[in-house]
Length: 130
Length: 135
Length: 102
Image (cartoon, rainbow over all chains, first blue to last red; front, side, top):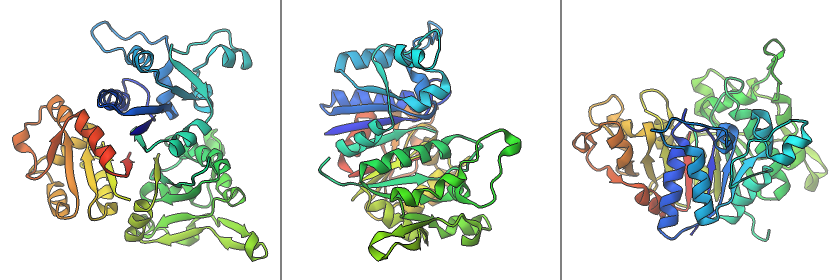
């Protein structure tokens, strides 16, 4: 079965990203397909490579990057939400006149249409948020 | 896209205190271009999103409530508001923005987009949806 | 369409569980996750609301979330099934649509 996931909260403050990760990992292990993981609202904060959690805590951003690499996941940060919150790739940084980008490996920035498309193309869409 | 799905956007949160209402509306506006069968549900504190008289000047925030009036132009005209949620908040239909659309199959007659329905009817709308977006 | 409702809030803080139960129809399932698992406990002011809805709705609760919060399985309302993440995935697959009561 083809799943897509929407994540509406950033890492650490809410459990949403942890639950979404554990859910996605289990779905992939059980042989399901993951069409897209779409990060919206503060969820875009899951995609900054500048996060540096303490050694004894889980690294939520790196965990997503690793899962994406292993399973060729499509991790999409909403562009409008990302711009508001200061998450940028090289193109976005240049377009907005910023001197740095901070997107983590395995993530890409795109429009809200990607969420709608996930809803159309997937058998199931599940939202994790607050 | 060959298939048409029934999309339901569920709004249960009040505006301004959090960003969910505004960013949900942004999804609805983008989603309108995908020609799916779209419905909006306003229940619980979500009914506060479409009340009249919002003025955010003193907050320094954008008042996005006028944007709901544009939904009709995007062919988003099935807006379900739950009666029990209005009642619980001492609100009536008169407290809500007049949301309308023009029916091109009926000589562009202006029609109301809002339908006030019971929780039981809302449950049916939810059950008939193919995709539910929760904000 | 059959529906799976997920609830991630304590019913003593927010109305998500109550609203989900109100809008679930016969044959639907409801899964409590994250802080939603407090809704599965016996002896709270919200326990009766869950028990009363059991004739129409199948209730599930996330085991890992119970464990994290130190909630002994013996204190769970009779009839609520405990699942792990794989069980969560199976529920999402089994029901046509998942609705998150955020």
